[in-house]
Length: 355
Image (cartoon, rainbow, N blue to C red; front, side, top):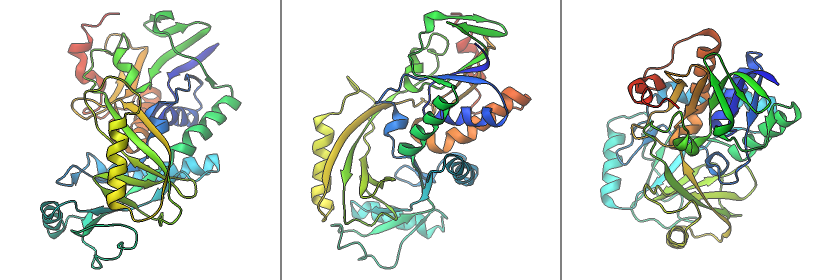
């Protein structure tokens, strides 16, 4: 089989890269082993314009927000699914100090945060003592429907094989790669945290972290927004379905759900949510974050037939469509990459890796 590109992984990055390559009429084949613990299959899909306790603007958010809405809307139309929703965050303050910090930020006329006038509006659903603020606009990308819908499309078009990629079976040449029965002009790794063990990119400063969440059924909670009090309570695409998470563990022994997180999450619910709920699942995954919190995009400095679209971390739903489009333009039309994301910023490090 001869293709222009071999894509490793059908998470959020692989999905978007294949989407844009298809628009360019490029041939490709995806390999994905359908790992049930892949972070793209477990994530809540939040696209938030602010980050951290000080509510600073997320990197490139002025560009990423409108781009995400446009691209997910277009993808949803193609797949005949609801791919993205506008769901602002209602942020309940856990302490007077956090309220004071948020009020100060809102007083600076910061466009993404505000203090609603009616501070009692959510008393029927939640217990809270220090009021709340609102973060806006916030979107949720419905990965729980996007990923399987795109996968089914790729399977029907014979563009995807459900199998594990084995690095030792790939031969690399300056202008192509050979893998089993496949000859491809380039291979692009979109395989998440596992790429930290990749023989060509393992020297990159990956910083994988573990996330956990509970899946809930909450029949009586209005689903037009996201709720936050330490943890995030996020409406999913299905009726009455909610996602509660997520932990950020930088040191972890395994990728399995932990009793400690479940205890913490249920205690949070018992003190916060006044409505009845049912826990339907407890999930965990390892995110492909990076030390400098910037993605890895582009071609290996020593091996021009090998590329990467990875390291999206917790911002994958906003970063992936933007940088997948940029990488496609780079591959097909030789357009430049954002230097803050271009993997060639690590040329000196990667040049020590001559696998």
